[in-house]
Length: 208
Ligand SMILES: C[S@@+](CC[C@H](N)C(=O)[O-])C[C@H]1O[C@@H](n2cnc3c(N)ncnc32)[C@H](O)[C@@H]1O
Image 1 (spheres, rainbow, N blue to C red):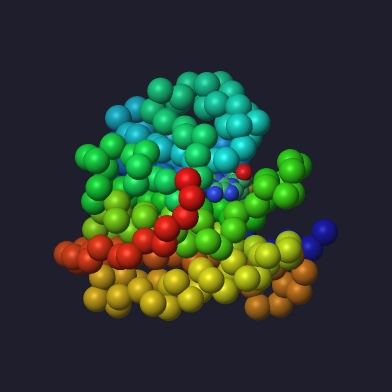
Image 2 (cartoon, protein in one colour):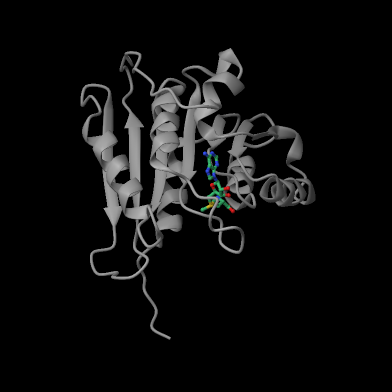
């Protein structure tokens, strides 16, 4: 089997999140699924940190709860059985401007119902919302997939959303494979600049 020295999209995501998040930080897992990324975040922030997680699939959240409990980190994680676009309603007001990282792993949960998939309307609403809680120096990572029905459209909508971000307040960058033809994927990262002021963005209205 050929071996690559290049980091996978997931490895790269974790590398960037590690650089932005310290012990005691507040972070968000916007697509908890079975909780792999939630566990990564919970270990990163340590006992004095806080992780808020969202998913629309209760069965996935059950697996995530088990994973977090087994690792002994459950008490530092709050899981919401809710769409990520509701995050401003779910998070304590004290979180505004304090979130060091928010991870979005879009698409469907492998091994579960492929009909339950992130969709552009709520993804963009959640991304808009997350900018309102991000700390200066905080980052948003968005792992996009184009291989499933609707994936390409969602990736394009995320790209357009990034294109419209104010350069004075944010940097947005995209990392992706050049020659992966099937089931391609990419990582989009948005950083809120230190010292930046975030003007309130008009959030798309989406049913909760
Ligand atoms: C690629 S999976 C995430 C994998 C996960 N990070 C893990 O470690 O297992 C995408 C997840 O997004 C969830 N999802 C779909 N629509 C959502 C929404 N509007 N809000 C929050 N989660 C959503 C799906 O239920 C699925 O679990």
